Length: 401
Figure 1 (cartoon, rainbow, N blue to C red):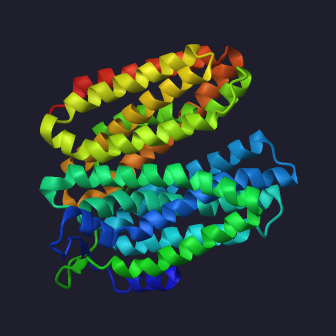
Figure 2 (cartoon, rainbow, N blue to C red; figure 1 turned 30 degrees about the vertical axis):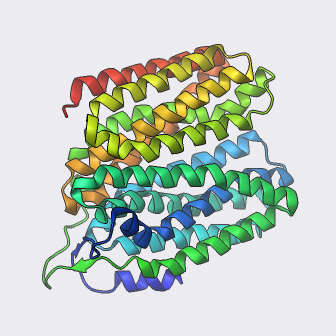
């Protein structure tokens, strides 16, 4: 079904697509009407990214396999994201969402039928393509269907959806694996992606400009959006910190013999949900600077606490602070970028911001891994705190409300 919508979206010769909402409902109803395909698709993504590394263990996979799997996904996402951003602006939002669903669905369908580490890593390329398409299109669509005066609220609702799926997706995957098997989790992901494809019919707000308006040529100079480079620099350094949370926290807890570390991620997701729910309206009341600076300070403090944590309560405190601070900063970066960009360049803007995140996560994973191996996790976490301090200084120097 997603392939059919893909072909439908591509139909026509170089006709630029103007993106604007057609309904007049409330912000919440407008987003609800146009974004369920993204939310369902992202839920399937978290099922897959949790299940595949565990599935690989059945065929001789190790922690290194899991690292390679995530690295391939991130690298693929980075490589194709600028092109996808251009297509979002030059062709159709629906096209890119259809590409995302198609990539995810094929990967989910084949993972459980390819009992080989090599095949799993090969499918990670397709998975990374789908992830890149979905996460580039989603914030762009949120911006499209949100009135300009309430753009900050629309972006905060996007963050809320991201945090919600991040909270329940991995838990659902682990339950399916324990109660049934890995194949059950893959089948659930396929079902969700088919549902997501069927919901593409709701993504119908795009209108075409008069015939004869030519699509800008694909050019290296317009793959990235210049107005988004400043917030992208904040995003890159923030991604450096995100890498250590998602890649190294379980290893860190194991090294210090701290049990029940899954609570860390639950607390992190819960506080992230709270922050995402509130940040849109707060940013309109207090401005970006008054919220972004405290957000980064909370992230920095969380890494300092982690550096010296020896017990679970201290790690949970760090999780709460990180969830709040990171969600605030992430939402505000997207608000800055999408508010500054021309409407015709929103796709390129989303691609620029998420490409910066891809780079930050990749560099952070590599650098912190080397530091932790050469010294220890305390030094690694303090280095990350220093990077976040650098992000804070950069923001204060460059940003003006």
